[in-house]
Image 1: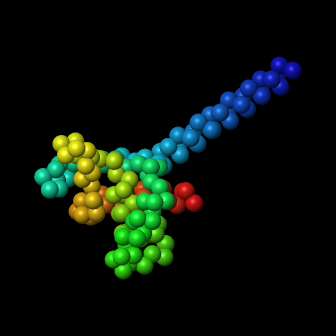
Image 2: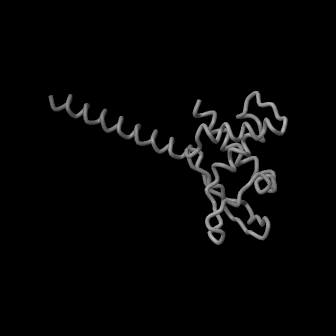
Image 3: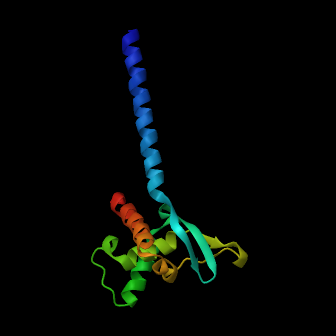
Length: 135
């Protein structure tokens, strides 16, 4: 009896550990901090890292990015593979604000597209990864 009970506790502990790891992995998918290889200066602002909260995005954000691209004449077949869509998604997910300007967001498409290519692609890759993992 003790052996069976001991096994049950071990199984439950293993399951709890697995659930905890899965929850942490899910949280890691929803947020991302991108540390720039070198500080980036844009319109007088020096940035060393950017923060994204993919999990805060809603269907309304998705439609807004899609509508913006459609107004520009961009046809979206698979948004998760379209740079413009992923960039718009990253702009909306970026949580960095300018505290001196009342908390206004300063990251826009121009900012992201002004980043060095390696940095830009890394951010878009995280946006794509979030979409693909969500199904």
